[in-house]
Length: 189
Image 1 (tube, rainbow, N blue to C red):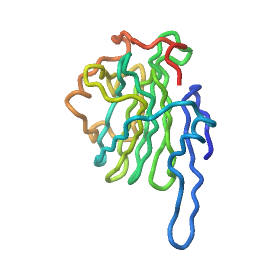
Image 2: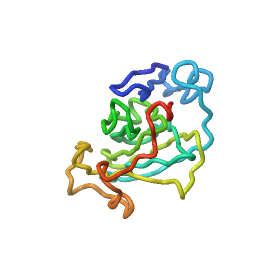
Image 3: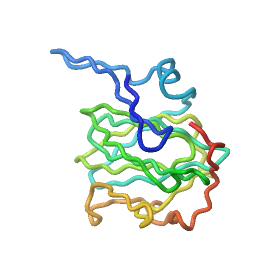
Image 4: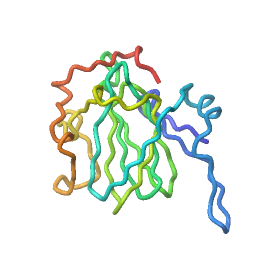
């Protein structure tokens, strides 16, 4: 696997080594030993999968302490624009975001540490999205930042009139109105 640094330390794009031949392809989508050597030491405890159609934006989501989650995400089918926003108070990159294009073709993965809001936009006709989490989902700890926050100014790769949102994602607070429970240096990897 190849670890690609992003503009925010601790957020990585992961490129697996893909073996192709006349039968198709094979790659190791996750190896805990290699991941801990190259990225960080963690234990993933929950795998999730979602299916969405073009125009769906899911996010920007996170779980508050003590149920914070780091995620390793990838696309099985289709293509998404994946976003990680730094919401750690005191971070030199607070309010900045990193994006990664994830697709069934490039087989890239995106590692999002604790202290980040996460979301993605489906830019293909359909997308099958899979992610690993290092903490269990806890409904009472879920939170979010508004997908169209003008201070973040995220280009989701879709015309605004084609974006499809859940009712919850339409009403999350803007970053300026959000009191982040994440503190830089306390929420790592």
